[in-house]
Structure formats: C-alpha cells, structure tokens
Image (cartoon, rainbow, N blue to C red; front, side, top):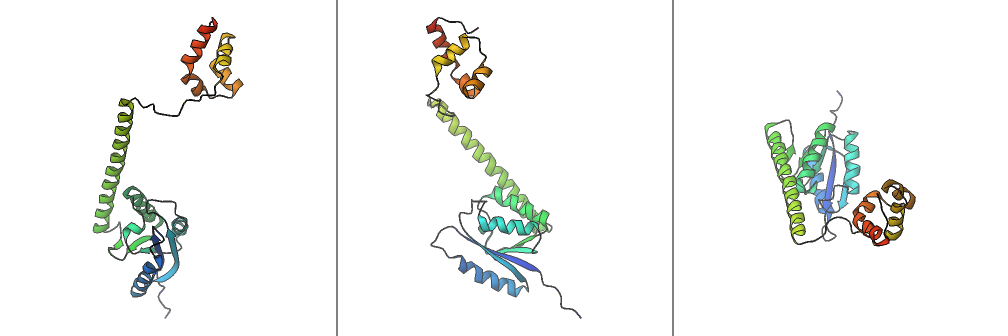
Length: 209
C-alpha cells in the first residue's frame, strides 16, 4: 500500500526591524508543520513593514501560490501577512482563487468555506471598506482645510515659461494646441497661465482673438 501523500506548506516569516529575528518565528512554524504532518515546501522571509505589499519574498510566495506549488501558507500571526486590512482582504481573496489555505499559529486555519472563515472574510471586508472610506474622508478634509487656509493645491506653477513669446504666438494667430506642440509645453500648463499671457498681450497692444 502506497504511503499517503503529505500536504505541502510554505512557511512565511516577517519582521519589521533588524532588532527582531525572523528565525524565532520559523522554528515555531516548523514544529507546527511537523505536528500536523505537513511537508515543508519552502521557507520565505522578509524584513519589511507589514504595510508594504511589495515585499520581495512575499511577492515570490504569492507567485508560487498562484502556481499551486503548495497547499497552504503558515504564519505565526495574521499580521505577519499584512497590516492593512484592505490588503489582507485582497490577499485572502487571491488565496481563495489559488485554492491555497492560510494557517496561523494563533488562530488556526483561515478557511473561507467554513462558517468561521466566512464570518472572518465578511468582517475583514467590512473593516476594509471602513478603512478606505476613513482614508478618503481624511484626505478630503485635509484638502478642504488647505483650501480654506489659502494654500494652493496641485503642482507648483512653472516659473520658466516664456510668457512674452507665448503671447506673441497668440497675437500671430497660433492656437493653444499649436503653441503646446511647437514649444513642448503641456497644454494644461499653458492654460494655467492663460491670464498672464493675456495680460502680456494687452501690454503689447495685440489681439489674441
């Protein structure tokens, strides 16, 4: 009788500073994998913030997950995966598509197909939406405060535009599009200085119509 094939797992450890040692996480994960009868496919380690969704080893891990090179990912805690609830919710959705489970030492298996897993996914989705709306509201309020304080928003106007020459171009009958192409200046930049150009035209005594 052939030996039953073991499930393969990937171990992932993340630390945010050099003061922490990811090797403290890995022995615990190895022991957990052994107790559950898993075969360890590979160990992945990152030294980065949990808010950074582009960590090198994490990107490699997710690429391997997409290829289904293992059946589950094991971490010590859920926050080792992502600090942002929005990003965590995205990751769990991806793993569900890849048919790769997520197992944590403290919470057990995060399985979106069982009642507890479904509840967690719904909770995370709700928190993710709240997080997005909160960030959006704070950003909007900050912009409104800057406007009320008279702070000009957007890009700083260019101070190297040849306004007199542009004014002469307009007097000569060139359109804004033609000036933009001829002088290599974005039309939006030209339009943001339109009033200044028109003042130059008035001072020259020309007509831009």
